[in-house]
Image 1 (cartoon, rainbow, N blue to C red):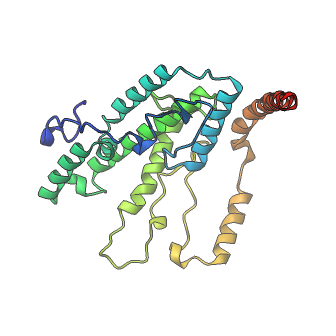
Image 2 (image 1 turned 30 degrees about the vertical axis):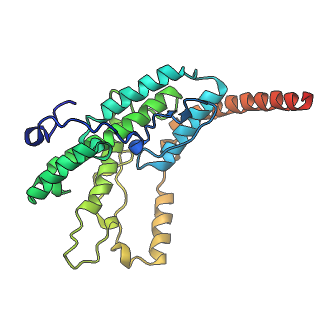
Image 3 (image 1 turned 180 degrees about the vertical axis):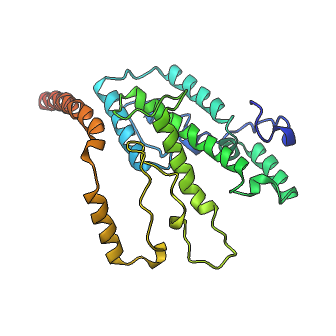
Length: 272
């Protein structure tokens, strides 16, 4: 494994002989949601904290496999790619903690011996940096799927996220920091929804979200209606046009292919 922030304290920790590979949606029996033994069987595993986007991307990916836009690799290629992904993920400390029991024990003992260790503090800049690496790695996997299936949103590649991808990472990290920064022993009505969201920005317009006018627990139904009406009135449909238009033609082509497949299947059943 490559040196990381724990190397100075722990040295080179030999991995456990049994790595838990499915902890972040890399399963040795599957490849990008395809069952390696039977690639016509597909399933979806959540890998980021952006389930709606990820479900949509995975649907495009499955559709590309079904319609032949992406060639299904051989089982040998699938296994080799999975092995590479696992090795890459083990170089991300927060992912390795979940996968490797020996590493988890070593880091746990380090943090128990030193309660002031920075890894015990979710608001420490070093902790945040490692958390960002973890989030970025997961998004890089999603970016690879986006490229493979020609998804109309471009956030970069597995090797390098573009500015949109980097902003998605920042958004994800900032939302989680809203939880980390809560002080459990301080009397307050603040919740994780009351955090400073000024660094959370739209990947299309660059605009930050509208701040809540009250604490989350103090909001009333009329406040929601007012905020919704305000956001709809200020909305700009041109922002989403570059994303919506490209896939309209793509979907129409896919529907035709699926109709052809369905017709062929009906003919086979009729002859059976």
